[in-house]
Length: 355
Ligand SMILES: Nc1ncnc2c1ncn2[C@@H]1O[C@H](COP(=O)(O)OP(=O)(O)OP(=O)(O)O)[C@@H](O)[C@H]1O
Image 1 (cartoon, helix red, strand yellow):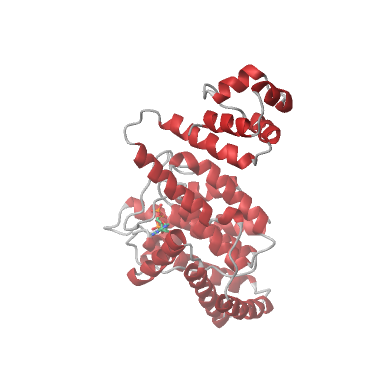
Image 2 (image 1 turned 90 degrees about the vertical axis):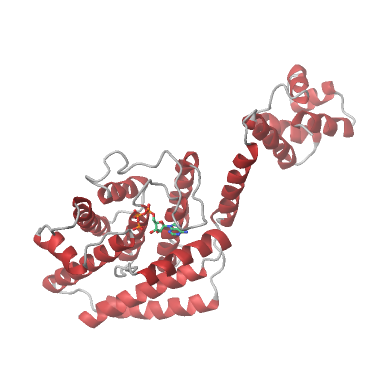
């Protein structure tokens, strides 16, 4: 049934003439006639007026209306089912985000969080560290973090080589310019998120784009700091990131979610959640993982935690990807939360052992 037929049926069932519906809804009778013959589609405002005049729930009218608009959009496109399948996967993703609601945290995760809270207290108790000690610690963890984050992405610089490139300015023979730039850029991006913390800044569209711009600086000028305009696939994964057209809106949701949750969620879960949401939207052509890990670490640092480092060896990478897929395909956040909690714990313990 088309929207117009549905409208007409609802009117006839109520025993109303078109004239009566016009009087009750305040919509011109000629226009109602066009709606009923599906020659025109009502605006949202007119949908509300019609629903109230006919005493039917607005969502039932809206549902028919949307179905018709989709049909109109598909037109004579030669593979409408492919479009609908794609749209369906997006709907699943959006509903799994539960319109910005979070599923309850399970007992096991709560227990792990409470262990973290104790370690966090111990770490806070060590502050303030003296300036030299602090800069040594930061240098050590910045290099380790850069090494592993870039290794996940396929960079082949070793830990030692990463140190030589970023701290000594040495060029490693046999390694590409891109690999050198990735290391240098990542160090700069860590400096940027640390400055954001010092400057009491927060997650905003501008800051996230700036982080991404730094990650791809001098590597991909065209895409650095810009949302993608084309579709992407994540190799080896069944999960399909959303269509490029949806990226700006999903990113607006991402920032809105942060604003709504930042004072409610446990900071470590918030950091994990923002990480997962960003890589699932996959707003960039490249550099999504590195940017999302930097965003996560910004949130951790902002709340007095230390850098959480996801390792780049094959086994750890697999666990990381599998945990992401559990959220994306099975709507199960637990493995990803637990992975991040474990990484934050390892980092706090290692920091504590060094002071
Ligand atoms: N289902 C998934 N399986 C694997 N990776 C996923 C999945 N969903 C999202 N991702 C993210 O995609 C990232 C890869 O995307 P992209 O190549 O754009 O990022 P990158 O920063 O260039 O590389 P990398 O994150 O590997 O360092 C992964 O690191 C991971 O964070």
